[in-house]
Image (cartoon, rainbow, N blue to C red; front, side, top):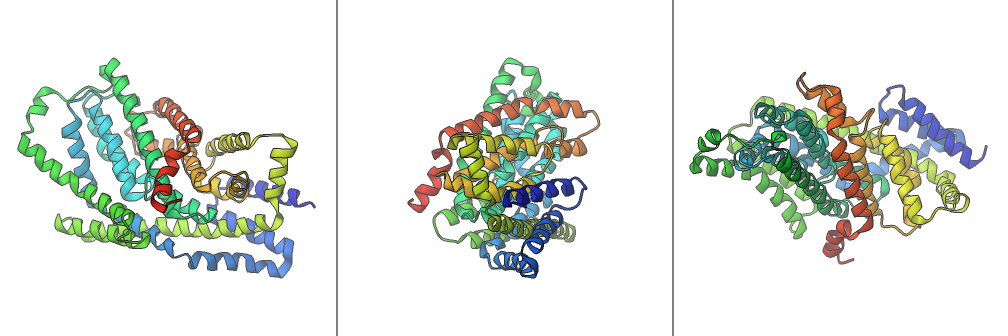
Length: 441
């Protein structure tokens, strides 16, 4: 059997086993370890062992549980709720103001947690009932929450970019910096859409009634502003200390975790239940990602040994005659198609061993490509039939919001993401300006 056929067999086996519903890391690790034993005999057992040593020796991995804990501590203690109350009062007088505030909230939640599921949970439990109660169109608000929560995997400390950095062997600090402006660009596109749409169709996002606006005195507004600023101060302290070089990446994550805990104590919200919930969720998510990274390193090592990257390069460039940009576009299309059926980690594990070395060989910046991959994951999160955010919204939303409403709600936001992806592809400096300015490269 040729190396190309072995690589194809591995991919097909992986896809089939994923359809059985088994855990991703178990399937990926099994295929990688089994293939290494089949190809190289007993010595192949060293491959997953070496991959585990690489994982354990990667010091920045400590940032993963610390940043996740920071996010869960802020959300479980209700400090994130204060942020939405602030947006509710200050943005409510505008048409679509609560939807705009929700997008801003999602950006803030993203900077606290790095996962889309946290934004979805807070958006559906806090923002969605408030907007429904005030007459907002249900399709508008479900689309806003799904699109806004997807920013969690773009804005630092993005856990998906950590995963990409480990598998692609790229510096996480540069990937996080590269995600800042693209994340803000997408948020700006969402806000612009809400402003324009609600200006022409005021019934989609009515302003707060005059009586409710007048019920809040300036003193009340300032108190809400003070309470809502606490999580923002934590976010900017963590990122600011890192950007100016006072703390390293790992130290910044420790500062964030400590600051979130201190804020919960200061507000007298650090109960035993809050601490237990934050720790349990942190442990669950951290272990899941560590197992996935370990399995991906094993799987990728087999591909490197097979030389499958060169086979794919020959197929794309020589046999199909694609230009480097044609190859790049085809990669993004394949991510969107796979995203209809798989989550972001499964997609990355399957194609990263093939795509990332090829991207580097074609002369593209792998940090910039990490941003493109992440934006495409955001699109995949909201693409039927099996978009991750679609089912999260259905599980968390009230019964009056049907699945057809959820599917229709994401159409304009997916279109905006595709536009954003095109802009970032056409102007790489949107992603690369911060890393290059900070590192002087």
